Image (tube, rainbow, N blue to C red; front, side, top):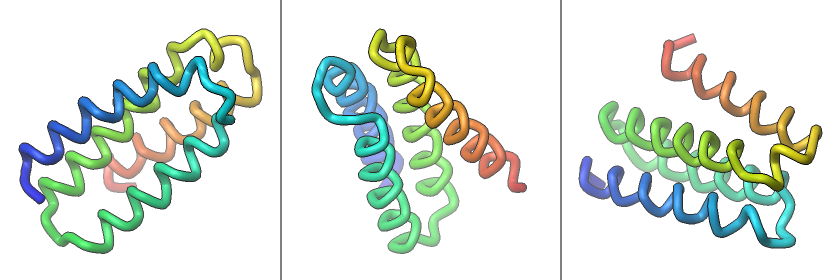
Length: 95
């Protein structure tokens, strides 16, 4: 996986966020699926640039997801997304 793959992943993530916002899938399911995928990628690479890119892609996904009407109208969903954003923000800071 190289930086181009990471950029492609970012684009896919943003597209998925907008697609899922109108689906019946729950926010919890989306976050769980992404957590699993993210953990899998993190285990497979030691490349710091790729890891940083994956975290950035995840942040972008969550930001796009957070701006959807479904999340804005769901207090539990907003809290879940906010907690994930804080967690990732701390990861980027190296905490």
